[in-house]
Image 1 (cartoon, rainbow, N blue to C red):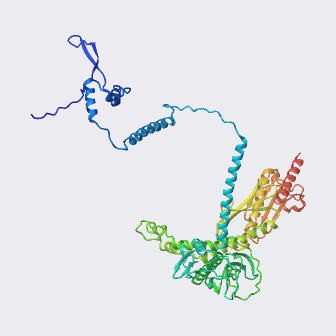
Image 2 (image 1 turned 180 degrees about the vertical axis):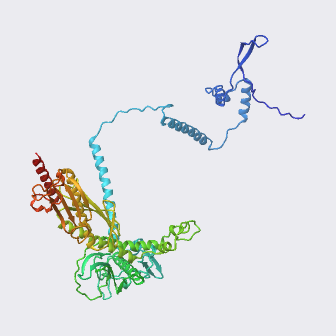
Length: 638
């Protein structure tokens, strides 16, 4: 017969839980029967239901070994007689090991459950034991022995370290010291010799000198056979042109007077002269590299000075570069290199004012050149040329002219930047001296200068405030001076801008003109406070004598009853003067006019002697003068 596949599976129909009879008018019988089914069990519920059918308290292993009937007992006796136990000698060992493994697994599970963070399954109660009686003497002895053993271990270790350190110091290891040299300097082995590099080629230098030095083993005997105590097991041999000490000296001095205004030293070595043979190799290499650095700076400046197309050519003589900064001011850059083989000459002692700006610039400018030589702008896009700046990339879209492109291609040389910074330093020094000189000689009004701390190497600014003592909170005048390379830019309080040259006289005349303007401003404010009427004011008088510089200002004030008139004139060079015009009532030859306000017309002005008034400055004297005339008027009217 052909086999037939029969599928046995659980019935999907749900069991009926309840049968309900519900009245329904639409049904033929008037009611309807509804069945409520039991919802099917989920997988977890079904598993729980099946697990409940298992009796975990019943041991089936014991029942399997016991016969349940007489027939089974007979069969067991027959099979037992025929069964022979295993003769494997390790069978008992295997059984015991399996039993031990089972017990250890159960014990491990118990420990895991009891040592868990949540004590929900098992808790092990600690068993309290009676504390033993403390034995202080025994504890003290044990602690003392422990400390003695620890101290002996530390002392033995320290002694071993001391001995090893002494052996290292006494023994000059050439390879160990060579490793120290290699960590600080670039070395390579060429044949049987070890060569090093002192140059700055790795950071972008293009100086022709290779800066190669050689590392050799030091010898305790000189060529003459004399014994020398060497500081190390190796020595370095530097080129002869890099021996000794060197530094760059920058001087800015007045040609007629040969007086140093400011100076800068690039780097002053500890001792200018030959380096002793027993000098440590690190000091030798540092001094040799300093000589190479100074020579590279001077070579760069000399090449730029020769190639420069300035209106006044630069002079390069030997190891000195001379150029004119301002008329009568000379810039001198000198390379000083001493190897100890020259004859000693007594040079004149110059007192130099050290300038940290120029000293730092000599370092910074050469470092910037090195950085530009190896660091180029990234191409945008990646297929573009390397080194094309953003301005040149945007030259086409921005439609730049040929002049703009030429200006973009021009770059300032290192010498030009130093000259610009020198001009700025000289001009700033002149400005400071001019302002300080005026402030020291001028007692009324007072000048206060506030220098800005946010300056650059070619630009600085300061604010000059003019005040009168006792009236500085009410009346003050200020202007800002921006110091450039070869000119000054002055911004006054009204917003007007003036451009001055590098001449000291122009700045001095401008400050005196601002002082005269301040006196007029003080007079106007005092007149308003005292009740006087301002009839006219002018910042540029068209009458009287001309001033040597600038223009004079005038102010005409009238008393409250118009019987007195004060005329104030303030000039940069003539100073301040006050004139008084009184009424003509006491004059016999006065003109008869219908109104008293015309009595002062045509009267002569008489100069007031301000030196006879009490007061610390012009503002206090003018206040006393206005108050006196106002008091006389009030007393006469009463």
